[in-house]
Image (cartoon, rainbow, N blue to C red):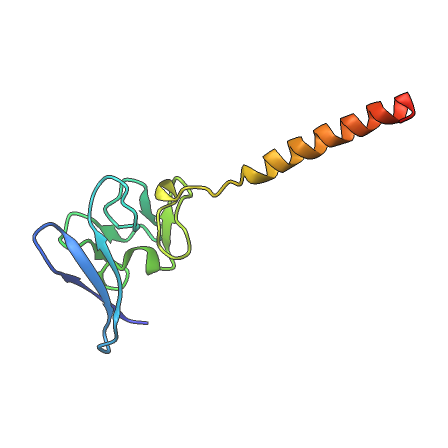
Length: 123
């Protein structure tokens, strides 16, 4: 799929869209610091082909002679291993934990102990 990166403001915000005039695919901001959407200027972003020229604006892929499409490229890598399949940065994703199960386990454990004590007493 051919993708075009379009600069939409001076703050280095790019819109990725299909060259055939399709809908916007993703919007990302270029920054050396990690952002919620993976971008080619991030200090953790690497090109497996070593073809990324990040000194150009927008970052340029020397492999295909076109602007880098960031996380959508099959050669995109994160040295922190935080690049998620949908292009989000794993550093910004909160893990879902469920403490409700722990409370239920504690109640079950207390009930089990009480039953054992009552069984020992013969009640």
